[in-house]
Image (cartoon, rainbow, N blue to C red; front, side, top):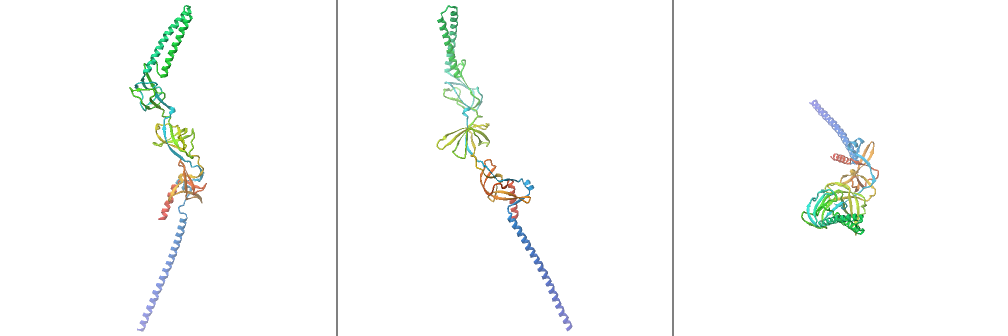
Length: 404
């Protein structure tokens, strides 16, 4: 019995030792793996920290190869100094050119028998506008007829006396009297004809007087109807040449606008936004002698069917010669986080590095090409003049991916 008990004791001792050894081995290897895993995690975290630090340093920047720039349509230019011209608009009105306008009226009182032209009609020089019956003209034509009859009788008497004088039958005094009467009759006829010619009538018109167009153009005023009695002071027709209009406007007393006679200017139609040219004819202070505002009149150089009298337009005047300022192309400006931004370009190891740079803007040129840079850039810096919108999109895309 003692031997069996001794064996059992040794069995349990060996079992306890074996289990202890196994547990020790398990704990040893488990701790080693955990240490390696922690070390790897720390190394990975450190690496990520370094990567994140680099990304933060270059946040918002882009690098492109020359090939990528070509694909994106990115073009570079240098910040330069130049003019940023300004254009100012002033209201104006088209008016008839009074140098190319005809006012038609009768020379004397009479009655309207017919009207041959309508308001707005295009007429040609010499075209009949209306026919009038003029009682005074009847008297003038009758006077011409009487004078012509007197001339005929005086001529016959003169020829008879001349023949008798040449034959020695009649005295020289009789011949001279007949000659003087004949010349007097000639003068009377010529005077009667001159009066009719001055009135614009002929001897055989029987009191009818024809109004004709003195020039080709548009009938812009018509104040005549059949049957009415007219007076010499009444204006019956006005004819305008619409291809020779004037433009009139008031120019305030400003230092930044300079206009001179014969200077060419532009004006824009408010209805169609089409632009036309004109040449300044005169500048007067009739608008306001106290403030010095100028009334300007210009001759339209580019006629068009849409241009007509009383049409309102805008005159476009260039400002005085501006001082040179730092400027970039307007297409280079992008709004990033509410700030005007220009992409500045620098070469780096065969690539171009683009950095968005906030700038303070000044005036924009009227032609939409240039914008003044008051701060943020320096002269001769390279910047993106075309394709800046694509760079902005790529930058925002990269920031979105990084935030995710």
